[in-house]
Image (cartoon, rainbow, N blue to C red):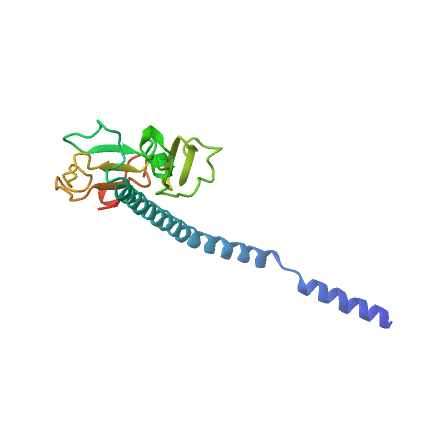
Length: 201
């Protein structure tokens, strides 16, 4: 009789500790609401982190070119490429990252001194244009911004310390020897407005 009474108490306890269907549905709804609130916040934080990374990279490239100029008393471009206008390049098509990283490409870094040390792109082997970091071979290193796009560079190749026709400068001359920028994230297949670009001036 006692055993029967003990078993009936145990079965009641087991029933009371289980979740009902309504309780499970309430928990699922709460989790869904929290996820819908957290996702936009997480996306915003991640986008701000990308912009911060790109801004840091723009500064590093500009500083590396400045350090190169101090070392060699010239800017990193081949003889004969200078002229009346400014020299434009980007980190996909040109060898500027290899030169700044310490490789004597085109004879432009004979002392093989590294001025720039960027992080390696994580997905460089899986993608032709990885997002964020250095990729490619030593002689042709490329640098991608956090959105998988190139950085643009303008060098004052005529040494007048004036850069013209820079985006967002509204036809004003910028007094500098180097300008670096990235267009950032593409929205709906189109570039962001120029005032949203990450620029060194």
